Length: 236
Image 1 (cartoon, helix red, strand yellow):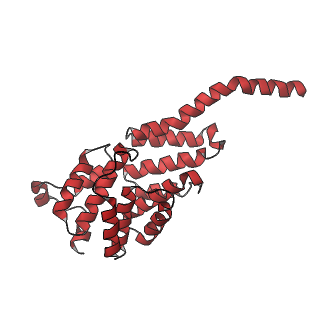
Image 2 (cartoon, helix red, strand yellow; image 1 turned 120 degrees about the horizontal axis):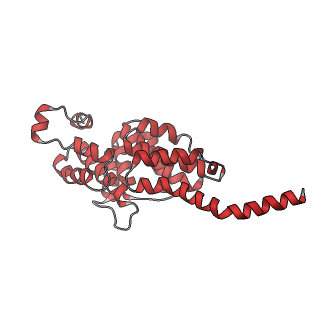
Image 3 (tube, rainbow, N blue to C red; image 1 turned 90 degrees about the horizontal axis):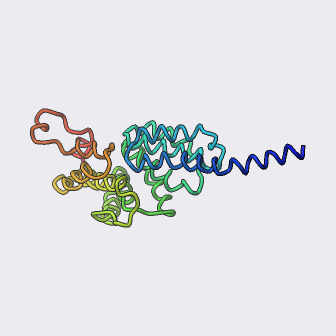
C-alpha cells in the first residue's frame, strides 16, 4: 500500500501541469467566446465545462451555469436564462452577477418589477454600475414610482465611464435601457440617439435587435406593427 500511495502521489505530481493547463483552457474558453459576442459557442463551451471533470472543483459548476444563463440572456431567451440561473448557487463571488442578471431578465420580460427592484437593491450593496441604475429606473417606473425612477435615471448619467468593465458587452445594454426609459416616459426624440447607439456598437445581441425594433424606418413604420414595447409606452 505504501508503494501504491507513492505511485499515486508521483502520478499526481506528473499530471498536475497537464491538469492545470486543461483547467485553464476549459475555464477560460467560455469567457473568451463570450467576450467576442459568440453567444451560442460560449454557451456550448460552458455546458461542456459544467459536464467536465472540473465540475467537482469549487464554484466551477455554478460558474458554468451562470455563463450559460448569461449567454441565453444575450441570445434573447430570457425564460431559459431564468431557468438556468435557478441552478446557480448563491456563492459570494457570483452574487452580484446573479442578482443583476435576474433583474435584467425580469425587466426584459416585463415581469415582476418588485422582485427586480429588490434584487437590484441587494446588488447595489455589493457593486454598482450605471446600467444597474437604469434597470432600477425601469423597475420603479413599472411600479408606478415615477419620481424614484427619474432619480435613478438621472444618476445613471448619459454614458458609461471608460473605466467601466466589458464595454463591448455592457455599453449596448446601457444605451438600450436608457433609450427604453426615455421611450417609456414619452421622450421618444431623446431616445433616438441612445437606441441608435445600442443598435450599432459592441456585439450583436438581443439589445441591438430590440433597439433596431424601436427605430423602424418611415417606410417600415407604414408597413409593419411597432415593437411590442411601444404600445405599453403609448398607453402610459
